[in-house]
Image (cartoon, each protein chain N blue to C red):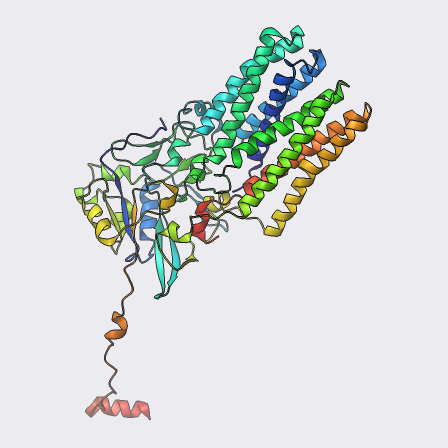
Length: 311
Length: 244
């Protein structure tokens, strides 16, 4: 599948944004973060900023972005529509949570309730994003039990690393978010390795025989219907050389998982402001790594229409 | 609504005979010609006379080599929308632009509602949907909905343009929901198949596999050529003169 940057950035940014929102919505009411102005302002601002930037980026993928409002109508059948609806609904508790924390300086009572609701909204919205991909049968690498948990794990991981960077930045860091960041990054790494392993061993029932209805023997493409690349080949027939893919997998592992783990582990021993620098770096490096991961998620996915072209 | 309608009795669709299709592309051009002025018009061409020509087509004809123990053969393979009974291209649509008609099962797009998110083309395993980059919306085969019900056409012409154009009658149009219809009978007689049945889209259109190989060609040889009899008279003289 063609890795359109607007969609790669959209899923990575909203994943991190919803992860951060979910972490703040839980850690705040649990009393693990004090209801101070600046951490709340920067934290919730960053979370909503990432979400808004991602959603805006996704509209750049549209042929007719001025009609985007119509996408809220088909929530009964479409995961994409459900994602749109839930992303907007989640802004309500998230906004209330932010107002209560930043301007009223409280993280109890209704503000805590709004935080928990925002966490729930973030969780469900990320599930919807994952299901958009997991529900597509023509793409075996996406239509897999690894896709939805992957989106949730990566969202929680990016969010936790961001919340740790935020707290370390304001010199109010603690071991719970820091340790959770390391553990979630390890979990993310393991999940990504398991996903790649699963995809590399996929036995796909659909082949050129079932695609053409010609049973038995081999079906070889003799001639395309057209001489130039068409929409189908540009959008769905995106190819990536195997050695290229292996290299990008190593880059993903280094940036999204290995380096952040090193930096976060160092944070345990470092005093402020060095702990803030290493935590901030871990978040930035991991975000970059997740962009590469998401790019690969698209580039390595093979659509059944490529069978018609002998690819 | 992009929820699917409860299955009706009528299922209009095509039956494509892979045995007789000669890959002449007549259906392709007839489709383009009709539909660039039809329901989903225009079928935009980008840079049509340049080096990077691209454009929207509802129907594409591939050619394959099918090799079995019996030998190899060329199979021409027209590919267009199969008007599936459970089309995921419809249910994934976030705007309600994609829909399946309850009355005859035709899958259509309301161009005025399409936001061009392209998700429907990802959901279609057959590559039936093509994005029009110029208009910014998705386009697809309409089963010539503006021909088959068109009172301005003579009754015999009320078939999809591709069916009307086919010189070898490899394309058949009819109601596949009616087991007594000519197309259903044809599918039953020839063992018509679904494409990618394992994905569960339940296509309405059926493909008739090429007929089995026969040994006819080898067992009924043509007579050997006879040597040319020497001509007499004037022609014989010409022959002798030219041969010398």
